[in-house]
Length: 544
Image 1 (cartoon, rainbow, N blue to C red):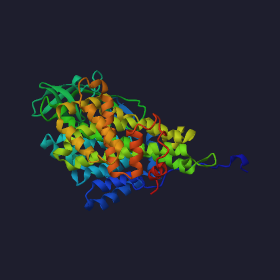
Image 2: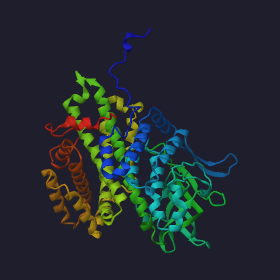
Image 3: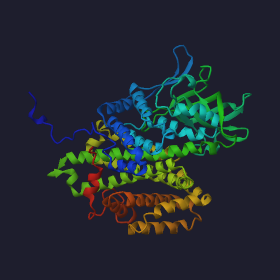
Image 4: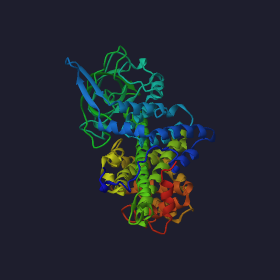
């Protein structure tokens, strides 16, 4: 007989069995806005299918399993031979396979591919962010490889394949391939020009032998890697295959796997090169210029990944508060909790709207849009990724003690939330990159100002913020010490302009009041109570 004191009541049902894409009104609107009408129905069907997978009980279970059973390094076989392999839980392979099949490495091969992929990446990140790393790097390797038409012709069909072909074999035998990247070293970190890995030319044209190390190399079981090494003419980009054409393993010595705060389902390794065969990509001495296209594409994925994490955190918080009762009513109806949820929802929608606008610029590909990306992308990477951690922490707090328990899924979001701010250049690197664009590429600022100028006159707070930004931009002397403040304003003004143009009035009004009008506190939940916060929260509610 059950104890009478053990009646379970007022517990929130899990957020499961829903369509992650169609439940996200801001994302659906952004896809419709940026895609050619002829592509919308097909894209919506694809994204809804992925959204149902992402929100399913099965995929959520795989995500939990992949994190509870992190990858294991095997340096040697039972006989003492080096094998340098990483074993992943089967759930990891299932997740990665679904990501590849969903076209998350295939943006370059179809119309509207970047917008469609951006939306899919944002949706799939909400299931499990760890497998996003190899998906992102594989996608991003394409522009770097295109600097060498011969290499691109060989590798691009494999990288853009929708077939996940696991296992280490010669690439020509595989229906699909994954790529990684190796730039940073112990002594240099973000200062890649301090790299000490040496590349010695071999007799074969374009072939080199590498000696050195890489301090961070994610997804080390990928089929190939783009790495930087010092050739006779300077820092150069190279393609390092894991398996050579004759079927032998390339020298790719995995020293250890990093024990990371989050992103635990994904392996990040320290790698030694000792006579490792490599093929040059681009010209000698032009390594940074060659690989910069890959860096830019992965920076956009940092924005999209953070937007996905924020969206899932907000969806969980709103879902919880919609069902949980306290102090005589639903939490979502309490004015103070509603203020917190609305504030979080604004951050999420602003990130999503900005991320999809950047993806649309990639699809356009014109000179104006390339100039816009040159400034907007590092500014967005700086700001959106920095907002992810406080959003995840505050959303977990909305669940109270339940949000501090692993079963809720919120701790995994919290642990993951700082990653994208660090990956592909931390905050100071992004801020300095923005300054470099302002000083050397005036067309980038012109494109940015043209973009935000389309919203002028629609909100007095946005107009004031644009005016203040122009004042700051007028004086770039000794600007480095205030670069973070300047980049923050660039990102916020751009987000505000996009929301004023595209979001419902209540969302744009609340964003301008809370982010540009100075009428808010430092913590979430300090928006002016006169705003239509109930509508903002309702828009964020995850209901398909």
